Length: 242
Image (cartoon, rainbow, N blue to C red; front, side):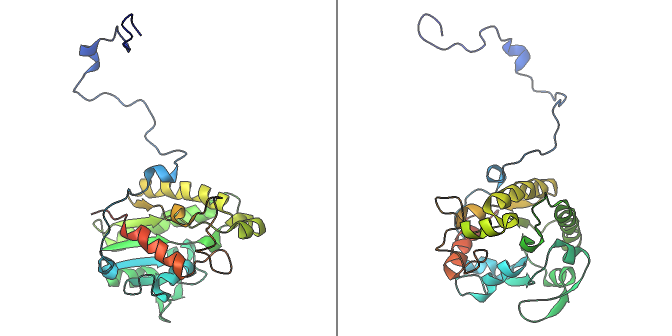
């Protein structure tokens, strides 16, 4: 600060040398490290109408199935949701039973659907609480295979995993909200590396204590009730890349 009280930042800076228009060599690692998923998730946008999702596909497990089951979800969308499934079952091309009762290979069914966008939330049952390297190896391969069958122009949204209630987290540390938070940070990094969008559903389900709001929770503290699925749809409608 000079004698007039005005801040002078870098008074000896060579402005001509600083203000270069040509490219300069990048000296920092361009990889993604220690990503906070909240900082890189899709920003809020004007809400789309519910029928926007009629041509959208959801790939997931029993948590995603609730979007089809409840009227507060999106029952008119396309669902490839398989109970107890994980990324490994998609990569291994296992025959899975869909929420509609149809037995199918997920990637083949997804490609035949030709969706305008795909939302993925998959693998809560795959978490073991030890870093889950295997889970991320399969998740990475799954995104590569999805891109191959869908083509380069179909947006893929990697959805964050949802939090759990405080009681569930105490009983099952690998499913605690704290552990899920760390998994989401790694998922966001993976999404960016694969050219996908990352959608923060996690924060939409939290209460003031940092766990799933009991108002949204089903009895097991992992799945959501109809109110929780309505909250999820609110997140989906207001975070669309157009």
